[in-house]
Amino acid sequence: MTNRREFMGYTGVAIAAASTPFSAMAEPARQLARRYLPGTDESLAIVGYGNARAFGEGDMDVSRELIKLFLEHGGSYVDTSGNGRNTIGTIMRERNAHDQLFLGTYINGENLQSMRDEIAEVLDVQGGESLDLVLSRAPIDFGKRRDQYRQLKEDGLTRYIGVGRYNERFYPPMMELMNDGAVDLIQVNYSMMEPGAADEILPLAQEKNIAVIINRPFMNGDYFGMVRGQELPKWAAEFDCDSWAQFSLKYILANPTVNCVLTETSNPRHAIDNFGAGFGRLPDTHERKRMEAVIRELM
Image 1: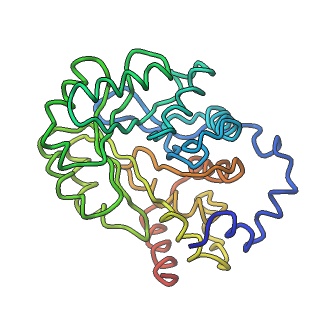
Image 2: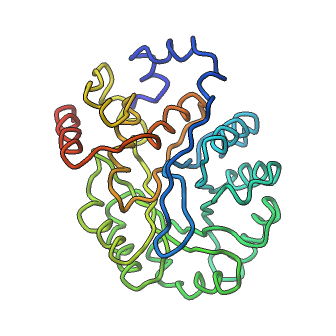
């Protein structure tokens, strides 16, 4: 698997980036486009952060820089789990950024009381009286305990509830929850390399007014190995695309059902590159087909 650093080294982008003053890359800070959560007056920036290694490992210096850049560009959604909940919660409290950030928090409690206790621990770190979103990685278990998750909302401990996975085998139980009105939001994998969500789960989300967060836009780095050494099509500039990372992200975001796509990086320069997908025009239907053809030839 080729990681982002190796890929940028292969393409020479890393050399160019190193010669650019960091302040020049970050200023002026363009603001990410936003989309409303279905049925609400609340919106999310269309490019978000996944639970990056720096967050999970508690690297506060890198994490603070990533969040600083994120806020400067109007970012909002951050996926948090494990120790990353403490890292991001601490920084959010330090910056008093509760109104700017929207945190998706994975919890693991096996019953209602243990979930309440876990939420209380998270809130003690980040401050506030309620989480933005409680997520579960176990759609089947969520279905069995949907009343408990709903109770968390009724108790005011979270504003939204949802499920998140990154494999198509979890789509059927997730769709069952969507049809039953049990979730406010789903998080799934979707990209040119993993297009399966477009067949049923994304149309169902649109029909049921359920928010959608996308993970694995780069297939955990495999995407960069695939496009390594390839020249970005010149016509990509027609929809304001400057890099292979933006090529994948803009394709995903061109689906209007998608509220936000998550990127995981502990490198501020890569984060700025990813933000570029949230600026300018997105590809139209014809351009998306051309993009698909490019990737098919490389797969």
